[in-house]
Image (cartoon, rainbow, N blue to C red; front, top):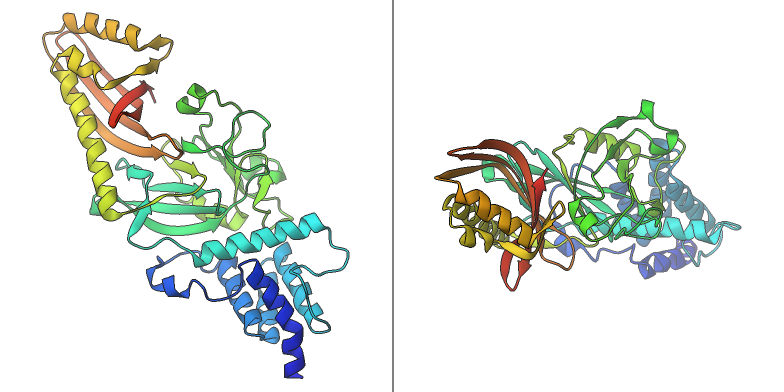
Length: 407
C-alpha cells in the first residue's frame, strides 16, 4: 500500500519541483535568513505541506492543509492543494491543480501564488544586507515599507535609531500588484507604480466598499518625479481583500498593492500618515552594511556641501549643485539662477539649518535620490521655515539637484 501511494504521489512531487515549489534547495541559506514575525502566516504552513508532499507523506500533508483551511476557510489555494491530495489517493496526479473542469486561468493564478509565496518564504535576504533605497530615515519615521513587485513581497523595516538609523528587518508579507505588472504610466493601465512614495491617509473600512477589505492607505502617486516623467493616474492605495476572499493572485489589482486583511492589520499598526515611506521596486537591490554606510555618507556630505555653499553667498559655487535640467514650478535653471543672483546681492549674511533629513534612493535605471528635510533659513532681512523636498540626479559622476520644492 505504501509503495502504491508513493507511485501516485511522485507525479505530483515532480510537478511541484518543475515549478520550483518543492525541495530544500534554499536550506543552505537558512542560517542567513532574518527572523520573521510572519511565520504564522500561510507561507510557513505551505512550506511544511509541500515538504510533506515531497517526502511522500500524504496523510501529514492533508492534515496540515485542513488545518490551514480551518484558519482561512476562504483560502482558494489551500482548497486546490486539498483537492490534489485527495485525488492522489486514487490516481497519479500529472499537474498541479488537477481538479476536473477547473478553469485554466484560475489554476494558473493559484499556481503563481503558490510559487511566489514559497519563493519569498525560502529566499529571504541575508541578515547583514539592507534595501539600497533606505539610505536615511528621519528620526520620527518609525518604519519604512519596501515592495518587490517581481517577488510579490512587502518588507517592513524599523528605523533603528539607537544604531545610527540602520533599517532593521521586522517582517515580510505576500502582496498582489496590478494585473499588467509594474511601472505605471497612465490612468487605467492596470499597473503598479515604481518609485518613492509616502502614506497620505488612513481610510477605515466603514468608509469603503467591501473590495478594499479592512481598510486602505493611499500613497502620493504621482509624485513630483512621476509628473516630471509624464506619468499620470491616481488612486494608488495599500489595501485589503473582500470579506469572501482570503488572498488574490499575484497580479489581480488595478494598480494598488493588496494584502490579506490579517496582513494589512499587522502592517497598519506601523504606518504613520504623512511620514511612512513606501518604496516600490521591480526588484529590490540589497546592500551590505559597509556599502550602505558608504552610499549614505557620500550623499550626506553632498547635501552638507550644498548647505554650506548656500551660506557662503558664493552664488556660482552654490549653483554648481544644480543640474542644467533643473526645474522648480515653471522656472528652469536659468530663471532660478538669475533669481538667486538677485536675491544674494542684497544679503549681508545667510544661515541655513537642515533638520529631520531623510534620503531615499529611487528604484530604476537612473540614479536618483529623494531628499526631504525641514529647512530653517535666516538672513539679515528674511527668516523662513519650510519642509523641502529635492530630487538629486547623478550626472557625469556628480550628484546634482534636478527638482526642488515644498514637501
